[in-house]
Image 1 (cartoon, helix red, strand yellow):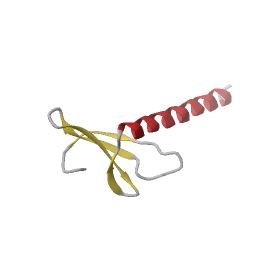
Image 2: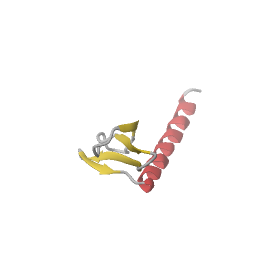
Image 3: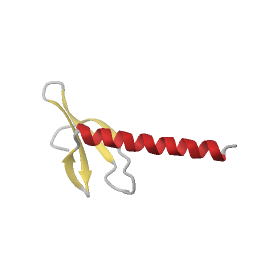
Image 4: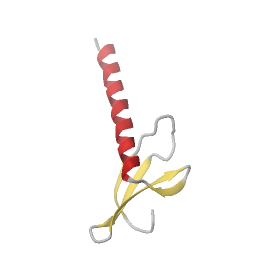
Length: 74
């Protein structure tokens, strides 16, 4: 990703999309950090707004799954 070594890698969940599910953080304290992902296989930067949307989407999915688990575990 962007010619720099990744300092962190994480999975990104996309509602209804089975690909492009990784994000890499590159950079360092001196130059700053950049989040990189792929979109249809092409590299692209992931800004804070998109990261926040993915966090909310993932939280909503988790809350729904926890509710399903509680209902069927009875």
